[in-house]
Length: 279
Image 1 (tube, rainbow, N blue to C red):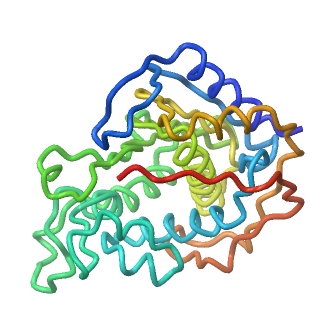
Image 2 (tube, rainbow, N blue to C red):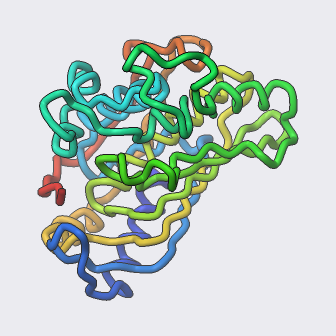
């Protein structure tokens, strides 16, 4: 059975059993726990949960990851790829989100490159390109960190990053990743975040010539919204299926992947569970 589901269910049970009632920015209210860590070994299969149907979510995971790697921060561009949820946070119909994830990954602390007048000397740091070069030239580096948390530009962001940083660790022929997340929506967000960074780990590993190793998910404010508690109680009673397998059509440069390059095999799952997104 899926070890990812087992890991996730233990976390859910911890929040339900030990979490404290706490207010939040949206006014919904949460049951919240301080600090939790999950570990996913890619040798156990791709960690897409099987205790609810995440078929459509997986397509959104691919779209959002490619969108971020492109450096985009426009919700309409992502909606054109079939994933429109970011429009909830867009500043207006233009889809502008400010300098969110993709901007910081590819142009940290730099101006909006979509304006067209920015010169090469005005650009910020391309953290992803630097990371890929570091993997090739200095694989034992302890500095392979990518951060989306930029205090200089937080006030310009439609939504400050929840999963705010990741770092890499090469171990023989394996590449490991640690994900840092400050705000963790256990029911809707966390399953998505697990799959998204597992996908990124596979993409970087293939592009750099490594085997995907372990994903460590380090969380701080781990919460279940009050209007998701019943869904969570039901989900953890479901017996997990075996983990699916991620299929990637060949190794490419990290910036050259297309949605059609990715697929899943042997994905068995329970019925869909739904809940309202707190904005």
